[in-house]
Image (cartoon, rainbow, N blue to C red; front, side, top):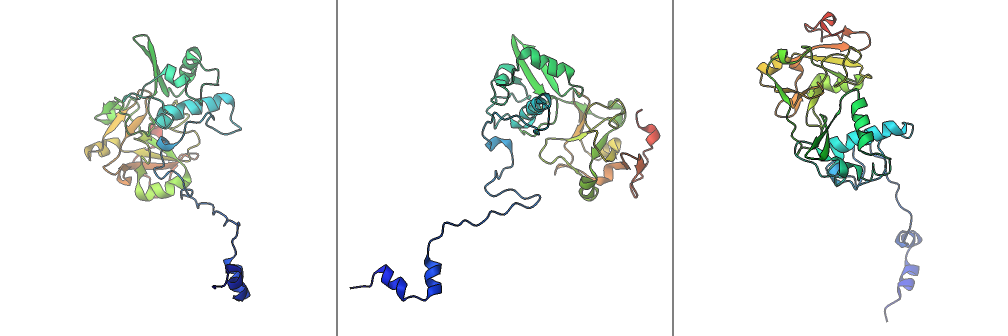
Length: 277
């Protein structure tokens, strides 16, 4: 007769017996480093694989109005597919479908309130219209969904930009990479450029918190084959080159946003006196 499992264990050295014992202790999960995706996360990185959620976007400290605005913007620019919200190729969704979305359904939002939000939006982010008795809404720009193709006005020369200026605002940390690799559209469909500096009668295309201003030589880029377009709310858009990059060779001048002086090595030909005031 063969010895039982318990008899075999008793005959083993103590340290080996300990190693064969089952344990319910789980190894602690390491937190992902900056720039890494969490374990088990969405490998595609997009909204398409996310489940619809009734939670509003934004921070807990944000007001309900701000969180509602952020949720509306996110749905129309990035999250429609993942939220099961039908969208036309030109970016429009039915208002009735939008109001039924779990994020918005419990927010006392209706067509009249939506009209107020669109009319009051200083950056003119949205277009709301009626077609044959049906109301539709879309974001005017800023999409990351590749299926959305908006009909923008092509820019064929710098004169097609009302102010004649195209500038990108960014942070000092982001500038460290941009200065080496150029501007990238990243997950969005376009790189966004404003027609001037935030605060100088510029309402769209740049955050007020920008620390570095990158002025683009539009004509030089156009001559090199880079395409530019103008959105309905006045944002200058470009897909960059074939890899989605607007190279540094098209940076006309780079300034410190607060001091309005050129960064060393990036003086270019742009003068602050030509910036809109």
